[in-house]
Length: 275
Image 1 (tube, helix red, strand yellow):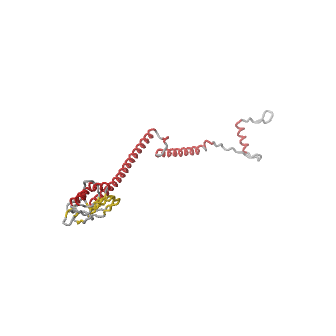
Image 2 (cartoon, one colour; image 1 turned 45 degrees about the vertical axis):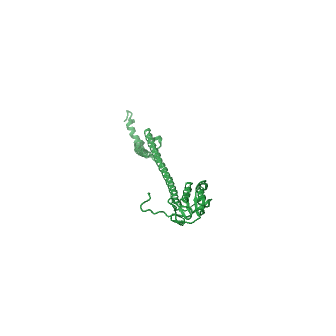
Image 3 (tube, one colour; image 1 turned 90 degrees about the vertical axis):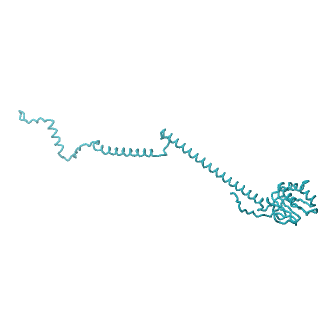
């Protein structure tokens, strides 16, 4: 535009047109300064937010899984500490423990009773065997099946000078010795038992079918003093043998009287031993 003087006046520039020209000038490469181009700014919350949220969610899921697994183990763990157990669980545990203790105590008492019974049975069996053995020995001695030895007396009776000694007087002497406590006796070579008898014969005395020759010799096992008194007592069988028959009677005490004569057991046809 020109004024009246013929001069060109600069045209009026609006801000909008001026800004457009400035941007165009900025695009011109002059070589003096490098062109700096602006890049659009990246908002971190937009690009980085998605992976962070995914990682956090994954960690939360993993932690929840571990917590659930641990809780399940605690529920199934019977050896958990008492601090984590409820009052009801502790009461139940105490009740179960008391019941187990009572059962074990009852079982122990039963086993102790059985052991005592076994010991008593063994002791009774041993005692019964001991008694049976003693009875067997006693019966063996009484029946004459077993030999015997022990303290006692040996009695020697000579042939009577006045008359022969009869069977009744000899049997009386045997009975007096039995009454004085003689346990085992022998007359000459005959073992005296409960069934022993003495009989008179034309030649002398006979004992259980065995002929006896004088002098007669009786061996008796028992208390020596009692046995000697039974023979030597005044007015007894010893005095009778001396006065009536004119026999010599000597009684000798001994610490060891040996009786080796035995008798066979009698065989019974109808009787049987009770077992």
